[in-house]
Image 1 (cartoon, rainbow, N blue to C red):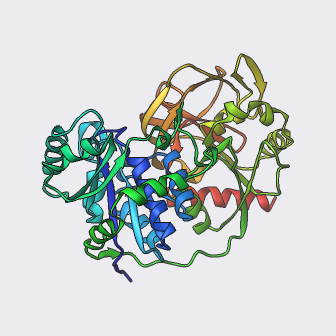
Image 2 (cartoon, one colour):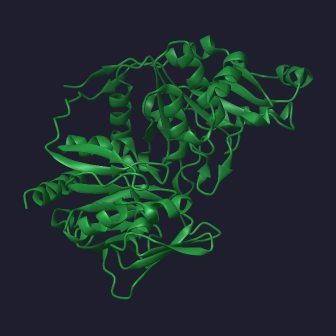
Image 3 (tube, rainbow, N blue to C red):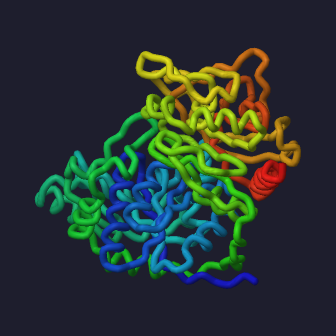
Length: 445
């Protein structure tokens, strides 16, 4: 039976990427958490990296909210389920406030704000401007009347004089004046920002934002959001089959909803490091994306590598995504040398100097070892700096109507009961049921 969810919530948006959304969102999360407030973090879009920072700041798993991959009902359901027990939800947006799929509003930060009836706090980069920032605020805030921009935080304020010039013309409530400080910028590399565990501390975000933002004002705006209709929750049953999940610095890109849905389908999840651990006893294996190229030597030398190859040859179900595809291939060319990988799939991988695939994916399972998935469609995202060259007789499980994948409208190499491709899938209930059922079948052999 559905009910209502009366949780204070606020969306952190901006006019463009690079305005400081992640720093301000993480700073608000950390500052509120330091006050003893239970903060549930969210990230609009398919990103894996920003959520690592939010999770570390809040001590609660950050969830993605992506209408393209999840559907509008899926956004509401994930928001309601993840917010249970929290005092406030802080949602970091993506790109510019109104930037959606293919130049539309669909999938934008504004779209999610409308779905959740959440007020928006606009992060504005004030570097190199004064009065002009108000033109930016007025334009962004007034573009869609259905989106309520309730306040502004000005970022990269250079001096007291700079603040004074801006203060003369603001129209919306100003909830913060964050000083320019290069030390607050999160370092970047290929695939985006550095991961949370690669930074010494996140305390500085909370300290700076806590000192220069009106936290009580932010809470008051969040509390102005009306209650939402919320679906009822069903207790997750105890898992009756074991799925191993590769989780370490090499493989760290997972949607929290995917893990929950596997549990809902009856899986017990165990986590291990392919670079450092022996392969645990399991009935199926899920290898997500990440940075195998940064840990190629450890992966090559790891005891799990030959064990995974043997388990796959024995018919254990395996699902791999992006970095998982690279690891399951024959070899990886990185840093001027070739590294031996698991050798499960008939393909060779190599790192490149630029992006080789970026964007949303529409996929249909057209072949492969899991017959229950044949004909099933799902959506996901790809972002990779590598190429994977399959053998001429390689077989493909996925047909793509959108996305690059492995090329020619195909993705998802398969061999034995292993499927791996460049697509980071957002799992459907049908996928999870089929994968868990395959694991049960393997366990009963």
